[in-house]
Each structure stands twice: as C-alpha cells, then as structure tokens.
Length: 168
Image 1 (cartoon, rainbow, N blue to C red):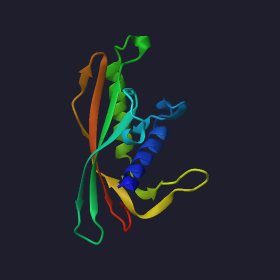
Image 2: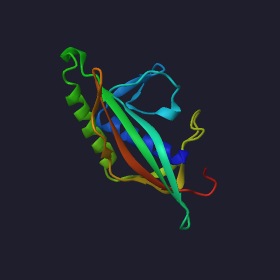
Image 3: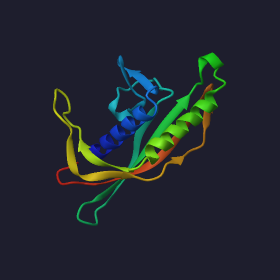
C-alpha cells in the first residue's frame, strides 16, 4: 500500500512543480514543492496554507483476480488565508486558483504512473519500478468552509493499484 501512496504523492508533487514552480513550502528548513503527506511529517499543530496536504482515509481490497485490486481514498486538504498585501480579501480567488491547479495535476494524462518502491531511496540508492501501475479516478470537491480568516476545502480521489507479491 505504501508504494501506491508514495507513487501517487511523487506524481502529484512533480506535476505541481512543473505547473506552478512558485507553489512551495518550507519544511524543516528545506524548500519543497507544495504537496505533503500528513503521515510522513512530524506531528505539529501547524496547519499549512497554500499547499496541498494528502491524507489517506480509507482502503478496500478486492481479492478476485490474479492480483488483489486495492482501492485507497486520498483526501487532499488545502486552505488560504489570502495575501497580506490585499488584507486577505483575495482568499477565495487564491483557493480557486488551487482548485484549478489540483484539477490540472490530477486530471493530467496519463492518469496512471508506474508503481515505484521508494523505500531506502537515499545515499545514491535509486527508486525501484515495480510490475504494475497506480491509477486514479476523478476528483470530488467538498464545499468550501471558513474558519476565522481562513477558507479551506477537501477534495477526494480514489487511487487504485494491484497488490504485488510480497507487498504489504
């Protein structure tokens, strides 16, 4: 399951970096493209804005067939406080721009990626392409909500993959 999650994350991150290189964040002193996976970060009370936060919320396995088909649900949370130069009055426009970016990177063809094992990638060790693909459906956008000066939205997408031998 982790290989599917990692592959989907890396695909979205790379597509966003190509679409909007200015959408970045600083995490532990490093500038990164504006996509993060909650379960991979240290727990904090900090709620990032103007970035996409992936949260895996559901999973089911269909054991029929040569390889089990795994369906995972990915929530993509994002928010904006608006631009300080505009007194935050542009927060709706900034959230709408993020809606467009998310639609573009998730909807970009191909809507699949080669499943890749990123475990142990460091110190010159390369990622390992696996034998199947990760593919995904359409985005389902939730309603915009407001908390104080912040507007936020959650979009959901189902991500599919075949569970390969030896994969947890």
